[in-house]
Image (tube, rainbow, N blue to C red; front, side, top):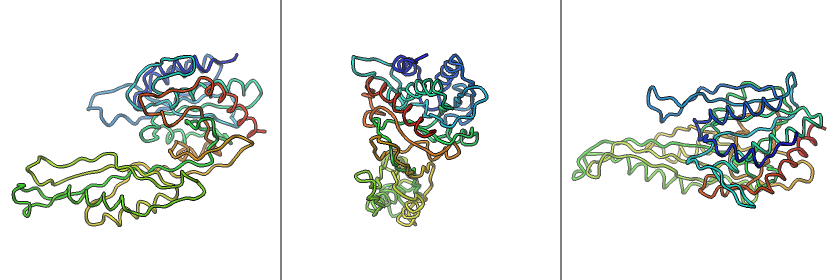
Length: 347
């Protein structure tokens, strides 16, 4: 039975599943895949939303794994079920589907489900793995990596405009914590400004010489984004604390970057790290057009699932925006590309 990837995308997009709230879309997929004669497993992911207060709950969250009963897959198609906020449902015109998750990554889920149906009809041993938490901390991928299923190849899906990625940049999230001493702002000499320390530290971080990878072309530069800054008590109080969160897109070993930041800010701020996804290189297959992804994926957290590949419909330029959309034509074309790639790998 051929699966309508466009209709399945509509249904998935209309189910809210921002990170930590993936339970409803997981249930839908589990039931949908069971109806397609798959053996379906729910892999529980215990991590909860840190913004919830004690006693609050948003229900169970879990990865969804599916394969034919008793079959160890040669190739697994995988992507994530969670989206960034805010949720908005699916609309469409003749060319595009619009809505949160259309390209990142619910359209990809639909394309992979449709491709898996064709692959298993052709006798390819295929599995499906849909995880939670990719947009925050890869919690679902970490759980999945503790429960591999013996696959030789993992085809991960992210918006690559139907190009096969030869590499993905890494993602390093660094926090700077500056401490000072409170005092009346009329007597700054009696205090010690944590914000001054933080601002000076951030200035020096931005001035650092960071690694460049010429083989990656225009994607080969390490980039730094200071995403969040907080601190202080009041305008008339010398601040005793200040923090900043930085996201660095890496093209080489992340430890080198962490060590460099620690040296630059020494004596002014403490350095911690809450996310470290490695830069990954992958091989070319066949005649598929290629690219280097400037964004990070769950691939570094899933080494136990086989040799990785990255391919998906849609543009990362509209992901995470109010204009998120996916071309219907590109979505359907990717179904065929997944079938082509998986078949070439296993044969």
